[in-house]
Image (cartoon, rainbow, N blue to C red; front, side, top):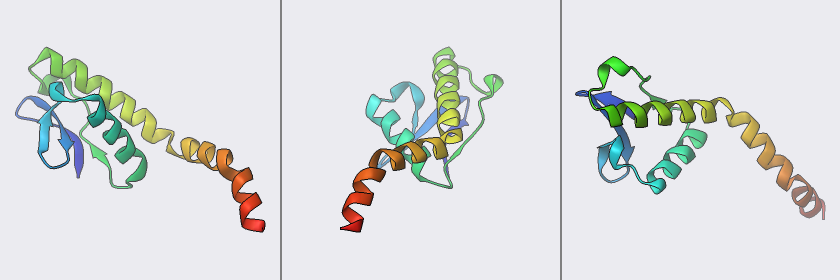
Length: 98
């Protein structure tokens, strides 16, 4: 499923309970949820940014930034997981061996 897509010359993102919503209506909570989905789902998909497919200048700016940031986050997914594991490794080792 595409969580970020371009359709009918509009940048859209997936909002649970509403479906696809225009990117200029995104809240910080929506962005947070997209980041969590990008890190947790293996099948998280985004339609690549293509300036020629978007008419609205605001959609171009917002979509390109969100696409770039989510792509970077997905690329660093293993790094984030390793960091989380190392943060809790000492506590895990302590309580699992007792």
